[in-house]
Image (cartoon, rainbow, N blue to C red; front, side):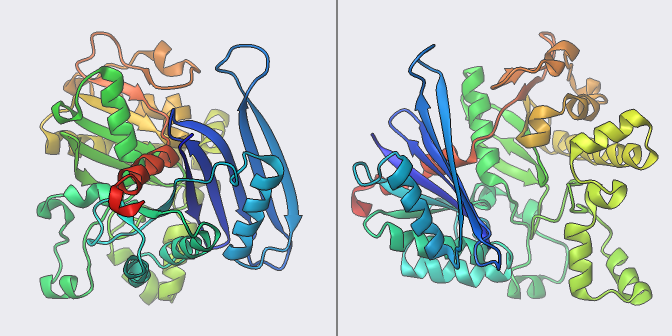
Length: 413
């Protein structure tokens, strides 16, 4: 076995997966939540193991849960270690060869998976000014994990790293250059781990090298972004300095005229913090229709609800606008992929997004698009000039892969 532990830490919770990289099999996964809250914390641990009967590829999940006080991340990792010890697989018998950590913002400093050192921890902390809700929580997970696994190499994998190939014309905002430089104001992009995984999975599925392909990847979940990828390199992406820019999302507005904020400040008296909360938590589908889940939006459309119908139309309008823009930036496209919760499970969204792209040779097969199959699959017609795919994302596996590229080097083990 060659297990890698992947950790995705938030301010009051963290998720984890243990993956055997010998064959990329998921061994166990879990969630530790309500960390530092007044109510008891909750830990859920799931062991993934082969079934004793039936096909050899069949996996059986055994889930174990408990509630107890979890005052901080260090205590949370102790609870996780107890779950492994009590329910398996045994980390004492087969400890992780490395621990990979998702870190949201790497700024312009990190463009590859990076071995965590004291200097790297300081830099992640300094970059918290760009991601105050994410980087401190990511760092708390790193510190706690290093206490739990002091002998394993720890590797930070940055959401922004894949987008470090953006050209200056794509990442530069047209504001005062000196002010922008002083405060590190530029486009960074996010969901990079997913965009990289999906673009490489699409190329492998088609049996073509990524260097030959022009791709557009729609990562559509509660948070949503789209990236133009030319020859395996991100050349344009919808999220910007923060994950707020770009597409309409579950609770985030996406693109909005900055003067809207001036108006709301001057006329409605909203403070900076209130505007921040408005655009991040009370906008998007939530702001338009009162619900943030695309399944609820589609149900509202089916009922003839006017607010849900408008929200769906606004959502799709923005998707089409970005698709057209990225077609122009790439000079055409070979592959369009949809991923994440909405991208993988909402055929109506996929069909509506691509409906107007016939001029570019995009032909969607309705039966293929509506099929409830799992796994990577083609949803375009055989005569489509552009291959359209649904590609389930696996950010944890991508983090584990990138972790091994660093942890496997002789100087780190």
